[in-house]
Image (cartoon, rainbow, N blue to C red):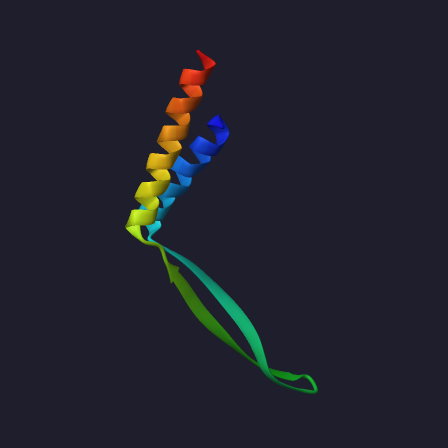
Length: 71
């Protein structure tokens, strides 16, 4: 439970810092013999700051609950 709490806090902070996930995808349009035409598509997925805050809060709650259970 403690490791999951730490993971949630780290992911929440990363979501707040970066704000989106970016990735690129290459696609072959035409391939005729040795000649190949490709294109690169750039995509991004926005991450809400609310989701980052909820992840941090949930992770901290799990860390507090785990420390109370251990004592």
